[in-house]
Length: 107
Image (cartoon, rainbow, N blue to C red):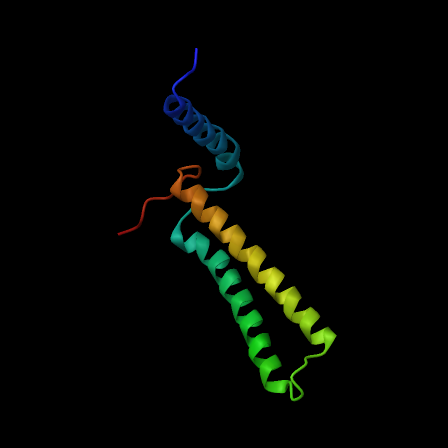
């Protein structure tokens, strides 16, 4: 009665792929590299804001202790950056797994 675990895992993967494609694909238009550029720019801009704030903070602190408000702002920028990176990675995973339609590359 014990089903082969590998067989079950293969079925699970197939089902996850089919369900994710069924749910995700209608929500997001066909993707192209040009269509993804705004997302990539959004992530890069958040990274730049976060790193610039860190460098600026390092240059401005003279007593070794930044103010709470500056640390709070840095934390806010990190959360923004982390969230956007997580979203971009989730999008990358969805593309890799075939959940979303991709427009053919133009030659």
